[in-house]
Length: 152
Image (cartoon, rainbow, N blue to C red; front, side, top):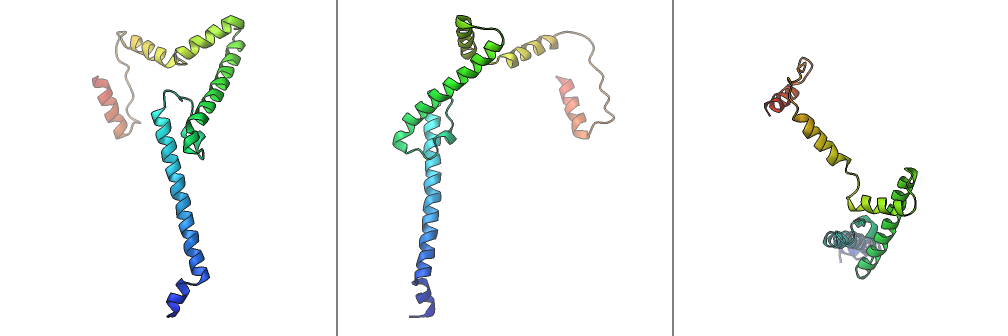
């Protein structure tokens, strides 16, 4: 035997190889777990809309559905509690509060962005002369963007 072979077969060399292999195995298992969870969440996104992949990291594959249902229920409850507190702050109580929460949740939440687009479109249809923009302090890219925007 040479010194090189005896060094590879020594206790410290074998221990080092084992530790490297175990570290690689752990990394691969974590990556596989994240992929399994990600695929599960993607396939059940309508059923578990509030559950994120990070919520299920470390959960065994056989228990993913049960744990996701539990997390979905917890997040739904806390979401409704937040909505209730906001609506209660606006003066809603009792059945009125429940009806307002139901309406809010069924509308998909805040519609102010959609309303803003509608108002902007309506205002854009108003006639008048275009606004003159001072282009002296604009960069070349900004001037090009402004020129392209004014063509519309």
